[in-house]
Structure formats: C-alpha cells, structure tokens
Image 1 (spheres, rainbow, N blue to C red):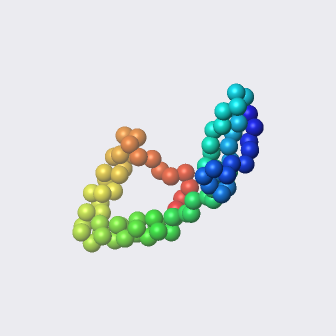
Image 2: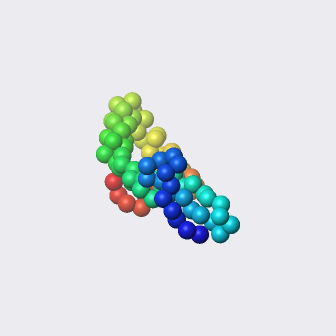
Image 3: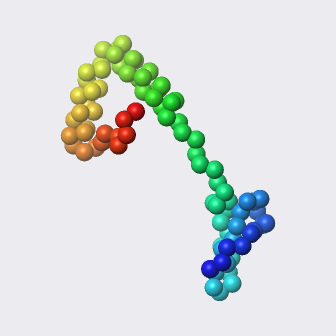
Length: 82
C-alpha cells in the first residue's frame, strides 16, 4: 500500500495504491483542519436556559429530572468541568 499525490478531485487530496494496483481516493483527509470549538456559545446557551427555567419557576423540576436521569445512567457528568 503506497500513498501518492492525487490531482483528480481536490487540491490537497491523496490516493492509496493497493497491492493489486487499484487506487482508493482519500479526499483531503491528511490536510483537513481541526473543527473549531463551540464551547463559548454552548456555555452561553446553557446560561440562557438556566435563566429561562428559573424565570418560569421550573428550575427545581428540571434539576430533579436530570438527577433522576443520572441515577438511571441515561446522562452522565462531563469529564471536564465547564
């Protein structure tokens, strides 16, 4: 199996040449940039949700449901704190 530069479809793509001579096209996998982090936006939406639940008076009920789901193993706490 050998990697060769492929100019067929994308600028930064490459092909893998198998032992039998067949080519498998791998479109840009080697040069794809990492995805951006959406942590800040997610935390902002979470805070907005908490404020809305508190304003509606259902914050305690929401927390009870989450605790019940944690106990049943439906949801789990994150590995890293927010």
